[in-house]
Image: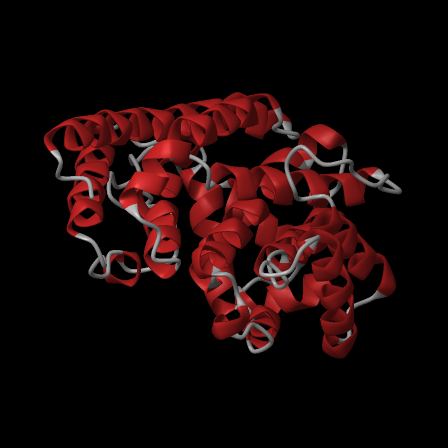
Length: 305
């Protein structure tokens, strides 16, 4: 199997089953580093924490980061640290994923959904497949292929993020890329369907089988994990900075946007996502509430503009 062979080349295992055996026997006894997944992206801090173009945003961003550091590590990244580390190491080492990255032109990706975002989604989608597969009756050989499919889907899911209807257009572009990479038809379809289904609050297309549903559900949940602390410590500031959005404009829409984020808690699709996702979202809302309170104070004393 193409996917299995690729994993074997990355890890010194004689079979796919041994590769997954190695993953299963990684220990979670040692607590995850409190800073390891703090921002929850593959980026170094200075990638997202560039100088802001407005002093009010600089102050608010520092507040967001200060609040984030007081929050506990989300339980998903503690309880499933082994799966996340395994997925991250594979993401960094896989020849196929490295080749896939060459199709991602950072300049054509939407500012807040660039390569760092896509790599974080890819890592967590792969981890979710490893966690979920046994409970869905999916064997080790099949899980190995779906694991890589989920990571590929994560890398490619926002390739058309600047376009209207980006999920549909992204699925078409992803199919072209996957054909260039020589992926088998069945796995291409899993990835294409997952990308088509990754938007929140949108009608989804039917997925043919349990394997395809797992890839689709894992991609969705991994993408929505980014709506937690990461949204308020990184994504928000990338957007307002890139679009030169006046702070008063952000203040006007902030409360309504927070309501939409709250609704995400009820949309997770995997068992694991439903269990751990709401906490991640709640942590983001905690940061967002502090930001909004500070914006209110700045509005009153005239320092927001």
